[in-house]
Each structure stands twice: as structure tokens, then as C-alpha cells.
Length: 135
Image (cartoon, rainbow, N blue to C red; front, side, top):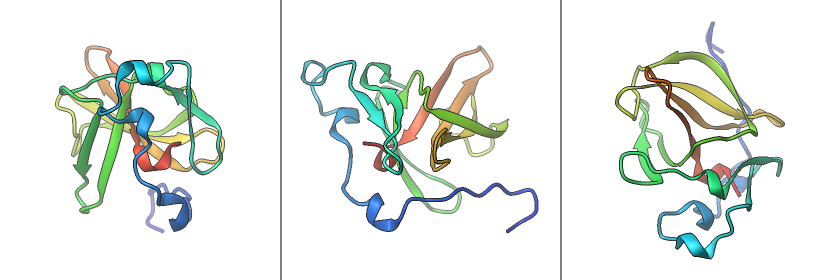
């Protein structure tokens, strides 16, 4: 473990399989999914957010990005995610959304890494959550 680093328990590899959760995808018709449906942490099944919290950023609800280490993440954008806790100091280093700083988002219950909280200087904020870690 590196000094000053924060590590989180990741779900077992078998939990990471199963693909994209359809209720987050841009391909799903708005009328096909009830807005009050909960979106859960795949690891512990606790509610993280709701379908009604889906938002568009940079023209889409779902984005695919790679971090500086080459890890690829498909994330869904959500205005609020009450089931997330946040860690670390906000930084704009390697940000995926211009004008936004980010902090790591974890499940409040099991602490699995679920994504990032993005914060703009103008007070806008949203969550970019890793789709394969949600149900």
C-alpha cells in the first residue's frame, strides 16, 4: 500500500460480469422504465440512486472513459446518488468533464468504489457511476 493512498474493496470478479444495466442505458425509451425504480449497489444490494436521477452531460447519459492507467469505465450520469459517500480532496487532474473537479464515490454501506462525484466551480454537481457496479 502506498502512503497517502486510499484503497477500496472491489467486488469479486464474478460479480462484475453481466453487462450493462438496461435502466441506465441511453437506448432505453424514457417511458419504458418507471422513474421511481431504485438503482442498487451490485455488491450489497443497497439503494444508490433512482432512475429519475438520470441526467445528460456532454449530450449523453452514458459515457465510456479510460483513466491514466488504461482502465476503461462505462459510467452513467445521475444528479443525485444518496447511497454514495465521497472520499478524497476534489481535483481536476485527469477530469473527464471539462470545468469539473472530481472526488471518488463509494457505496455508503459496503464501501465498494461506485464512481465519482463531479463538481463545477459554478456549483453544479453530478455523479458519474460505474454501470457494471450497479443493478
